[in-house]
Image (tube, rainbow, N blue to C red; front, side, top):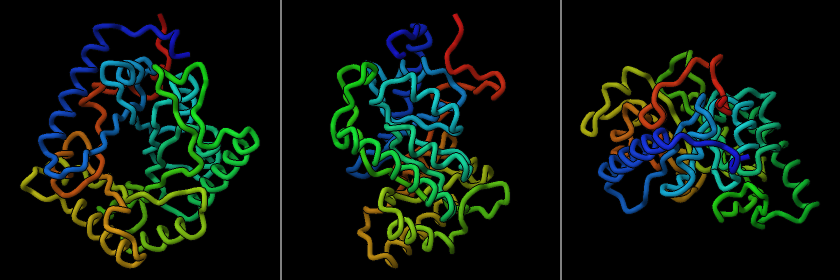
Length: 284
């Protein structure tokens, strides 16, 4: 459990400095009154790294993971007050498990098909049915690992972002921009335990590397235009559908284009090890 983990003080100090620096850059780039959500991408990093940033002084809440099994293991070890984001390529056969077994799963950001949305709906419905039987919906989670007095409220509805393939690359997941409207409409009308909250893109690496606050990224333009069309067609309010775009190399440009959240990993945690060498719990 979290209280038994040994955090290296020097490692924790470096992580805090890194995250603080990224936060300052985000604040400098943000010209709006609303804050930008920072997802610290912790995939392939040990649970102690996450705990170091979630505990005081920063108490950072939002962490992103790419692999279902790794997320399940980390969620079982770490405080329930963490807000997990699943941001990786999503397999249909893992969706039900993901939505049903992680109470503090805050958002699934990589939904790109009706089949996956329906599987997530099925999993969240089962989760809600179980909690309803236990009378815990909307109540603070009073588990021993809830963390630093910040009890996590169990939520019935799971936030969903639709991933859009804005670059047209076959290697990228996501629906075509022209197909995003139909998927968004399906989630809103046929998935009562899911809440459509935004659109997400990863985009082309070359465009990402060329992005500056003054040089607009074509992928960001495409996502923004797709969002605007969906908002109009579905009669949504302007702020109802968020934009999730921008990573380590281009998040300041993404913020300038109107992104509501950014995903930063290596600039906070450093280079990642090969997946085969990953240790959720470090030895010694």
